[in-house]
Length: 465
Ligand SMILES: [Zn+2]
Image 1 (cartoon, rainbow, N blue to C red):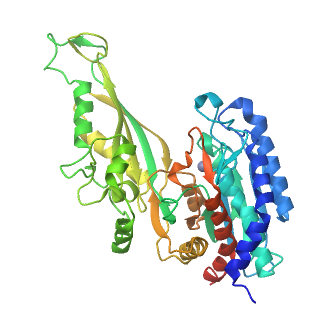
Image 2 (cartoon, rainbow, N blue to C red; image 1 turned 45 degrees about the vertical axis):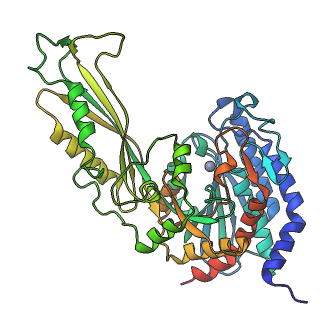
Image 3 (tube, rainbow, N blue to C red; image 1 turned 135 degrees about the vertical axis):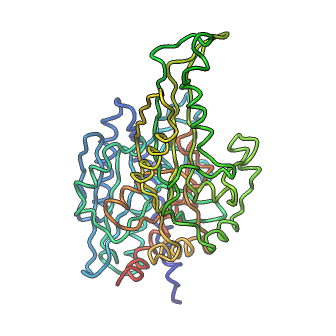
């Protein structure tokens, strides 16, 4: 009796799952905490371990790439089909700090299987999700009879993601030619839930700034001078109050210029997700939902730009009163931006707006830091359709689509390599990223292997021009 291809893939994965998990556990035992200098050798050991394992998997090219910080791993497996498209997989091999006393039930660096869950720091973020590609590509080869992947396959696994990827942009600019790809697959995200498989289609970007306001050269008597000179704390308050209009839209002229609006299809798909706002509010530890009029909570988080006051201060902060006109005040602001918004243009709009608010006698400095671009792949992009189909086959149900409200290095890949970024992840919110008792659901991990096994054939077809 002939088997359907899906059965053959599942059988192959099942036969090899034990060895796969043993290897993953070995990797999880390496405490590759990039934020802690005492683990620098472990981060390097993790890179070497992965490079060796990728070689063993079959990648003919495996290299450890140095940065000014922790090393990254690059691997390449060209297809024997010269016309095949090129795909780059991104993930990271460093992990968040973890210690037993943070509330872990077991040693964070001694993987522990309980039922169908594997507990360890990095189990979901991100070693498990990087590692599913190793068995995935082997299942792809074994069940298609190929000796090389259907796409030119490249992997870039960085070692500093949990420290804010300080050298990542330089690294990919430096290796731009070797990293060139028709599509980037980011495996460092999650799904809606165990029962609702989803594919993320984009992330918001980020612009951050601090505004310092100086009035009189020192704090001065509010009776002798107050009401007759400008007060920098009042100006800080006015700026914060003027950030949003009555509909909670950002009131900075030009801020929304060029943004990619949500399509009706996306809005309808978001609305179909089993979203429980009360439950979400409990997670938010907030007492009400609030935001831009005309948009749902999910739309506000995923697809709309925002302005947030992260901090405000100035004047007397001690006990009791002090009747002064303060000398200085500050406001810390951050802006989440969406596809179509350019950080440089947004920064220019903010700068102009702040200048226009400034009364005579208040000197100000506006300092920007840490801009990240947004990224978004349209729902009808052939590569996104291929990812969704592969996930759908693995989960035996159509997948839905989400976005990510946060910001990350994926945008740099889109920007520098000029290729669409797709997200293939199987982690779920309960996995506890960055928290004690991080785990990965083994059944979902194996679905990740399976989706990766289907993906290369599908992408080879859908990306071919
Ligand atoms: Zn991660």
